[in-house]
Length: 340
Image 1 (cartoon, rainbow, N blue to C red):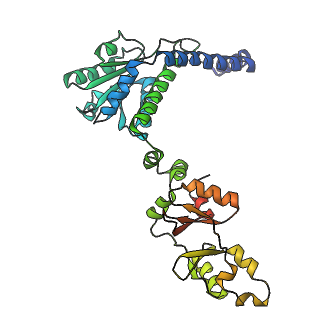
Image 2: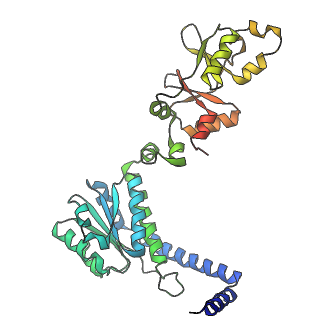
Image 3: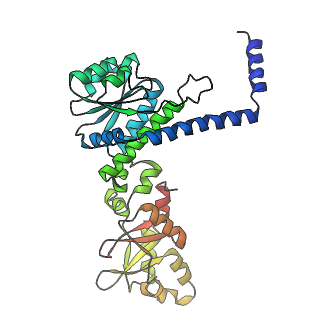
């Protein structure tokens, strides 16, 4: 095709696709997919509950098998299941016959995803499951298809209209597959009693991992982190200044006769105290904050950050279950963790 022909084609597409037409096409696409989701919502029933129960009892893993667009959806479903307490991974249907069948064990459950249920690449997987008595779940809109006939349990998708204007590209069908996978994951979260702490174990990195991290875990995972500096309640001003400076945290705890923290001195306390010639006659107890802001060690790091920001302070003290100060969470440190 010549450059002029390509250019005229581009100009023609721009001319035909006016902004209001594009918006209307987008709304039509979403509307069609919403209709499909409503059909899926109304169709969920006993087979879905059986699939959840079977996966919940599975001592192996859930192996998601797919190809093409459904394969991409299958990969996402496997990732969601794995991150929410159900061991799972994806096997490409075309790769299965070239050695990846060895990734499927006798204690596993196989979930094949195909809207038509007739993709030839699934055949080795179906035969393998039948030969070794591996429980096979099939997600499809065609119960009479080859996959449907091999299935031990069907997750039936409604035969909804595809949102593609030509009716060719899978759009509604893949949306329904994704929703069905999310529904499985959500039901399994409830069935397993999966909690926020469990989720945090599988998401230690990035902003999400930081937001799910508890303060006691920060103390446990960073044993070499700078400890909370401390001075005696009768320590002279010079010692207080030196301790805060050497600690590089802008804060020091003030310890009473019994070794417990009775207050804190911050940079702000020092600045307010350093006025007049008598300032160096003062001791830690003269300038300390007697009711420091504290937070439980079982609270989330994001809770400590919110507390620092709402109270406009540079740090909060971390208490154990008995109310003893075991450390401090510093605003600068919390921000460096990527909580926001």
